[in-house]
Image 1: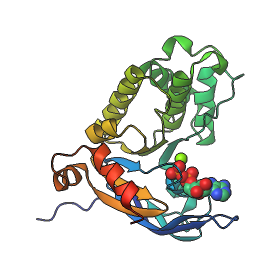
Image 2: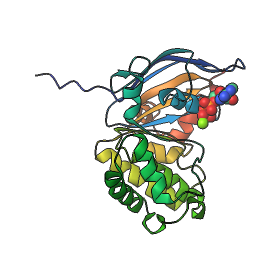
Image 3: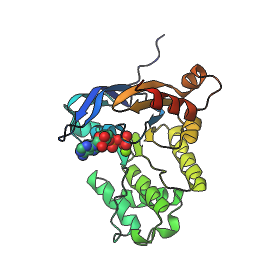
Length: 250
Ligand SMILES: Nc1ncnc2c1ncn2[C@@H]1O[C@H](COP(=O)(O)OP(=O)(O)O)[C@@H](O)[C@H]1O
Ligand SMILES: [Mg+2]
């Protein structure tokens, strides 16, 4: 008997991006994120991570290549490919004058979720993320780490199957980072697919099932974390990352 065929959460094929100022941000990147995966997209600053995420989510237009989200091609089935995605972007982008619960509920509105459904959902998400006592206040009362968590709640309100986070733990202290990673792990335990970028390689090593490392717009590694660590026996992900991204020009 064959295993039932499962469509990957994401397939990107030969993705290229040249910005208007001629910066070649992506030089033909391909990888696949299996459904249910915890996938770490790693690379030094300027490698092209945010550009890839921008293309997947429709915020950046690609120069060439293809993107498919749960089997929906982003050119031919743009809306379908986007409804499955929840995005926590790299920049904090929340209105400081809006009430925290409203930020989450109103986001649901963009996906056609009635307030009667969105309100209890928002309350549960905010409570799970440790913002339960804050939710009737304006967003300006939140610390940086709390704003990141609010962005996660907002990204989940339409119950996407695929959550993409661009450096969600940047500038977040160790303890909070741990609890955020634990929360994300609980989401993948429930079947959600996660792709994230991070500079905390130690945490990526512990949590990610698969990893891609990009450098100057090119893919250097795309493997399971287990295989990658086994291929560099005795080394931590951090050592492997540094070795690959500092010798890639030799
Ligand atoms: N809007 C833009 N216009 C021109 N160049 C850009 C723009 N956005 C990003 N870049 C360039 O593209 C490259 C990749 O950037 P980015 O995708 O943000 O990398 P990362 O997220 O891995 O740090 C960098 O050289 C960056 O300067
Ligand atoms: Mg970035």
